[in-house]
Each structure stands twice: as C-alpha cells, then as structure tokens.
Length: 257
Ligand code: BV8
Image 1 (cartoon, rainbow, N blue to C red):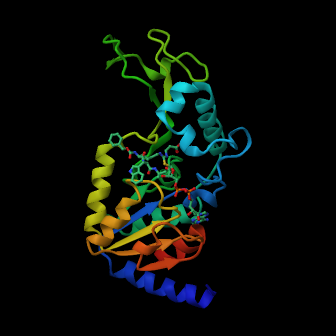
Image 2 (cartoon, helix red, strand yellow; image 1 turned 90 degrees about the vertical axis):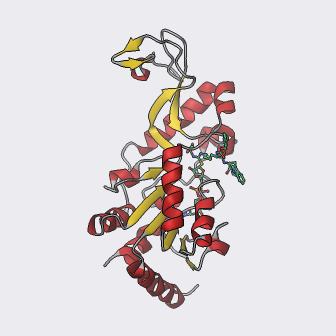
Image 3 (cartoon, rainbow, N blue to C red; image 1 turned 90 degrees about the horizontal axis):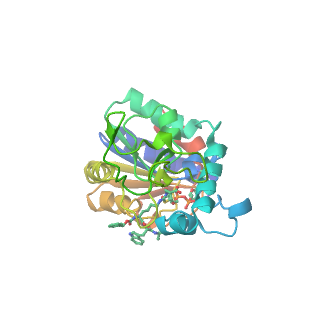
C-alpha cells in the first residue's frame, strides 16, 4: 500500500475519530513492540524457542513444569524492568486526558505500559505480569495482616516461590489459556464494544478469544471498526478500514487534535 493510499485512509479514520462520541480501543502485543517488548509470537527466543506460548501459558504447564514456566515469566518481567511506553501508548493516554470519558482502553497486554503512560480505566483482560497470587485458594483460614489466608508477599523465595505454611505455589497474576477472564473487566469491555461508535483494533493478530470477539461485537452493534497493524490480521474482514502501519507512528497521527 503506497503512502498516498495509506494517508487517505488515515484522513478518513481521523474524521471517524472526530465524529465518534464513544471510542473503544482494543490493543495487543504490537502496541508495545516499538518499546522493545517482543510480541507474543516473537517472545519465544533462547530457552523458550522450542515452546509455543500456548504451551507455557496454561495451568497444566505450570503444574507439570512449575520452574520452567515461572522462569519464563521471570525473564519476561526482567526484560520489562526498564522498558518505557512509546508514542503509541502516550497518544492514547493524552487523548483520554484531553477527552475524558470518550475512550475506553481494552488491552490483552500484561506489561502495564498503558498504565505507565498514564492511561486511565485500562481494562486489562489478561491480567498483570507484575502481580502474583497463590496457585490454589489458600485453605489456611487464619487471618494474616487483616486478610484471610497466607500473604503471597511472605512466600519463601524459589522458582516458583512457595508458602512456608501450606506449600502453596505462587503464580503470575495473568490469565492462562483455558482460564476465565476477570468478569468485571470482560463485562465492562463488552459494554464498551456494543456502545461505541468507533472501535480501533491496534497491534493484535486477533487470534485469541474472547478478546478478539469484541471487534465482532462492535461491528454487529453498528460501530465502525478500524484495524491498525503493519501485517494482515484475523480481524481484517471485520474492519471497515485497515491502516497498514506501526502504532507508535500512526496512533499520534490518528488521535492528535
Ligand atoms: C477462555 C496472558 C474459557 C498470559 C494470554 C474461541 C475460538 C477459538 C479458541 C477459543 C475460543 N474461545 C476460547 C478459546 C481458547 C483460547 C484461545 O483463544 N486460543 C487461541 C490460541 C485459538 N482462549 C482462552 O483460553 C481464554 N480463556 O476462553 O476460557 C473458559 C470458559 C469457562 C471456564 C473456564 C475457561 C484465555 C485467553 C488468554 C490467554 N492469555 N496472555 C501471558 O501473557 O503469558 S493471551 C496472549 O496471547 C496475549 O495476551 C494476547 O491475547 C495473545 C497474543 O496476541 P497478540 O497480542 O495479538 O500478539 P501476537 O504476537 O499474536 O501479534 C502481534 C501483532 O502485532 C501482529 O499482528 C503484528 O503484526 C502486530 N505488530 C507487530 N509490530 C507492530 C504491530 N502492530 C502495530 N505496531 C507495531 N509496531
């Protein structure tokens, strides 16, 4: 697609942004790529090269190989330690600041970069890489610091850390394949999808459900759908317009006043 065609698509998309009172944005790993975070597909390097993400990001894999899965997440966290939001994250946060309550940000990302860029009310459908919780519900009914059950922060170090009292393992606070999404975030995301006039689908291959299903719901509810991605995606046929570009370059152009 030559630049002229690309830019004419951008002008039309900018008009749709201006015309929409309610906008929903669904993001994936691609929005963090220009911050140096490998996308889900590209993350499988080094020790993990022989594993598909879906093989590691499951409760079964963690129970079968707790150290392997824990170390994968530990490496992803370490890589994220000094990563900064890019102009794509910033453009979304600035638009929200300029136009309160006009844009609902729904993300599949667990890297926290939208929140770090200052975005508000981020619906993190797949959890947060920096939050840990017990693998199994803690059966210890004793109160610890005003809360029922053992305190995850008191876990004994290890890969993974475990509870000194009941041996429970600590797991990353993300949603694994085969696990339910947080209902409050999913409900709010579905409400935003069926009530928006415009949905922007940015940096996602659109292969994972129910997140990708939100674009279908928005389209069925009458919203305009725009896909922003340098490559074809599984949601292109749901879109009214596909902008072939990178998010750090195009989101500022799309959302700038
Ligand atoms: C569930 C957290 C049910 C963990 C993740 C319907 C149909 C088919 C399958 C299913 C279905 N419903 C459910 C399923 C099963 C499954 C699923 O969808 N499987 C897929 C693989 C077929 N879904 C689930 O298991 C979900 N749970 O359904 O529970 C249930 C019901 C009742 C009771 C119990 C259970 C849970 C899914 C969540 C899994 N967790 N992440 C972790 O991070 O480790 S998913 C994870 O993968 C990400 O969060 C994200 O969602 C996905 C990766 O996709 P993308 O983000 O799009 O990244 P990807 O690398 O694929 O693509 C990057 C894109 O960026 C590319 O398009 C590229 O071109 C683009 N790009 C690159 N550079 C740039 C760019 N774009 C812009 N700018 C750039 N610079």
